[in-house]
Every structure is written in structure tokens, then in C-alpha cells.
Length: 490
Ligand SMILES: [Zn+2]
Image 1 (cartoon, helix red, strand yellow):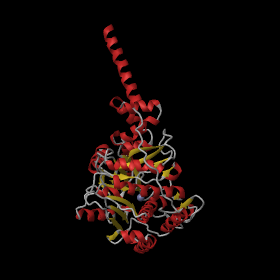
Image 2 (cartoon, rainbow, N blue to C red; image 1 turned 90 degrees about the vertical axis):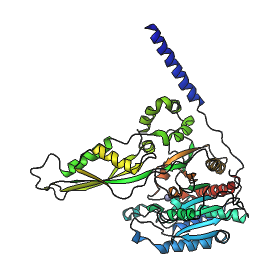
Image 3 (cartoon, helix red, strand yellow; image 1 turned 90 degrees about the horizontal axis):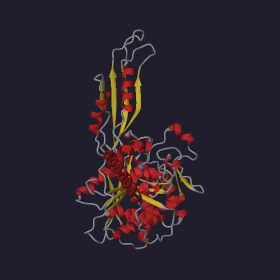
């Protein structure tokens, strides 16, 4: 008996030693920080141009009949007039009526091109929210610190920033070794089917393979990640998919004085309760690299859990499930977003239906979500059908590619002597245009050099969207250096 205790004790001590060793071995990766960026940006000029871009009401509506082609045409005319060098030196074409594609021919045809992606369209302003805006959403008002308006963050800072950076390089007579494509879709906010998807199809029809694609999606977190006080550049390496399912119950109507045990509304409600009570299984796999990169900067206990996922995976997953933000990073999420049913207070509802939206984790599929939901609800009275064609999650891009490393290096370069910055691969919760390019390259990354606080993040797709002038200048610097660095890639 004694010897069993002895063995157990030795095993426990050995286990603790291994866990501690792994925790201490979890160290930060060395930062490669080459020359600082040498560029002099005329702040007044660039802020006014972005402001002007915001004033074109290039809204994407779910209803395609509301599409305002004139706003896009006028914005294109403005771009041509404002960035004449780009239009003169780069080949440009309009794709599917409103999307823009520029090609900056590289000297070495052997090298695969890179592609910088942004979108021209913005989300609408709900009429009831209009009065909450400090400045009218399409005014592009500039104050001491900010450029205000719809599209400043999403995504006109990126689009205009890329063109500003290109202009700088052209003025310096920079000659790219590899071809650089600039692609600006016009319907990202409603799925990108007519814009980015058509651009990708066009390039594919020309047998073009790309080194990498860089789109929006990740930002520089300044306090967005609980427990991490450093700033974190989050490079999106994958994005979740989505599907919406309708749950529908039909029942006999009639007078409410002699009701059945469950009305259509009651049956439907039970199904929603069941779905919320049974979240999709957690899988930390796609966010593990993110958390492990941050681990050295976290508390010792968190670090220990992260360093020992060989033994603590389920503990980690249950910890991460506690916050909505981290839970969304490790599972397909469930959100009941719409419900209707009933006609009168004393009439049994003949019908009730609800819409539940799911954001699908890589590894899961829209078909799996449908099957899983039916299994959880397990009630033949409830009809479950997709409301529209869902979108499966994207592929996961590598973090050990030269492209990823170069983007990371450029981020450090753009950060310069600024505060400490961690670069971490990240799973993007929303959708971007980038996924359309999966046939052209495995290296698809999503990042905008924009320092974002918890207050800033709320402004995306929301009231009082704005970007600081300081941040916008950094966006330009980043793209400038990224294109310059492409000459030494791979
Ligand atoms: Zn966007």
C-alpha cells in the first residue's frame, strides 16, 4: 500500500515539475525590428482627402434596388482626380461596374504578386440613430483629433491609405520587384458577391496565383483583450462562417380559454431555451496560437494553464467559455435574433417562428450546424430551415509563412519606437472580402494598422464612427512600408 502512495506522490511531483517547466519555457518571441520608416506625411492633405471620401454616400443596402451607382461613380472620379499618379502609372480596370482593380507591374515576373484589399462601401445609418451622431455621418468633419463619419474605420481609411502610400512610393520612383495588386470591392457589407468575388474570379481566369492577400479584419488592440495590458496587433488568419436558421411551429388555433399544455409560442420558446442551454462544443484549436502568444504577458496561473494544454485543455476551454468575447473565439455561437407569433391576446397562435443566427467556427460547417440544431431541439413539431445560403468558415492561413512574418515585421516597423506591441494570429469573428481569394493563395491575412480601444471598437458599424488623424497617418505609413518590403519577400 505504502509503495502505491509513493508512486502517486512521485508522479504528482513529476507532473508539477513538468507543468512548471513548461510554464517557464513559455517565453516571448524575439522581435525583428529593421530600419524605421522614413516618410514625411502631410497630415493636413491626407486628412482632408479621407474626409472627402467619407462624403460619398457609398452605402450597401440589403435591398439591391437601393444601390446608388452615382455615389460610386462620383467617388471613382474623385479618386482619379486625387491620385493621378496611381492612375497614370498603374493599370486600372473597373470590375463588374463598380469594383476597382489596379495592377502595379513588378520587375520580376517569376515572383508571385501581392494583393492589398479594401472595400468602398459602408453600412447604412439606421434613421432612428441619426440624431445620436455628434456630427452628421457623411460630413467627414475634421476636428483637432479625429476625422468623423461612416466609413472612416470601415473601410475607407484602408482604401485611401493604400492609395496615399502608393502615391508616396511612385513619387520616390519605387519599382516593385513583384507585382502589386490593389483591389477595392463595392459590396463587402452585403457579402462581396458582386465585388471581391468577381475580382477574384477575374484574376483566377488569368491564371494568377498570389503570394498573399491583405484585407481588413484585425486591428491593434489597446485594451480589447482582458488580462493583457500590452497592445496586440491581431492578424486575422481565418474568419468564421455564418448561417441563420428559421424555427417554425404550426399549431391549431382557437380560443385561449381552453389552451393546450404548450401553445406554438411555448413550444418555440422551449426550443430557444434548449439551444441557449446547449452551446456548441468548445474547440480552442483555432485560437490557441493567439492565446499562447499572449500567455507570457498574462498572470502566472493563466500562463500555466496555457502552457499545459496537453493536460489542461478542458479547463482552458471552460475558462474561456465564461466571457462572451473569448467564448466566441472557441466555438460556433448561437444567437436568437428575431421572433414573432400571435395575433390577439385571447387567440391561440396558429404559428410562431424565430430566427437564430450562428457564427461558425472553422472545422464546423453550415450543414453540421443544421443537423446539430435539429438534434438539440429534437421536436418534430418544429420545422428548422436555413433562411438563406449560409457561408462556411474560411480556411486557416499559416503563421509560419514568409508573408505572415513580413506583415508582422512591418507592423513592428510601423510601431517604431512606440509602446511595446505583440503580434498575434487571430480568428476574425465577422466576415471579410478576403475569403474570396482562397483559390489564389493559402496566405490570406486580415489586418488594419489601427490602434483600437474598447471605446473605438463600439463605433464599427455604429454611431459616431471616427478615426484619429494620428492613427490614419500610421495606416498610410504601414502600407507604404509593406509595399516597400515586398521587394525583399521570400
Ligand atoms: Zn469592412
